[in-house]
Length: 74
Image 1 (cartoon, rainbow, N blue to C red):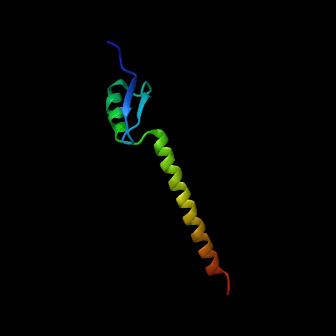
Image 2 (tube, helix red, strand yellow; image 1 turned 45 degrees about the horizontal axis):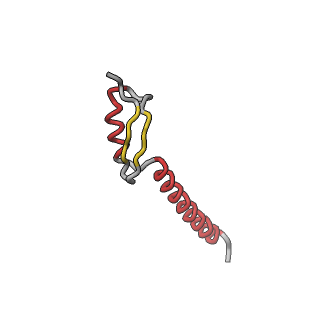
């Protein structure tokens, strides 16, 4: 009986990805595959994170400008 190394996971974003879990202990691969199924795939996760990063940069720029305006005498 062969030990399963690659798992096909359907992520919450509805993408199906084959994951190589050979770096995980054999008795933990199924559990990790279930955990992955509860998350977005890597591409969707990166896209969401990039969008959050841009929003954060916009907010920080606005705060920096507002703080600068408070420090400048009228």
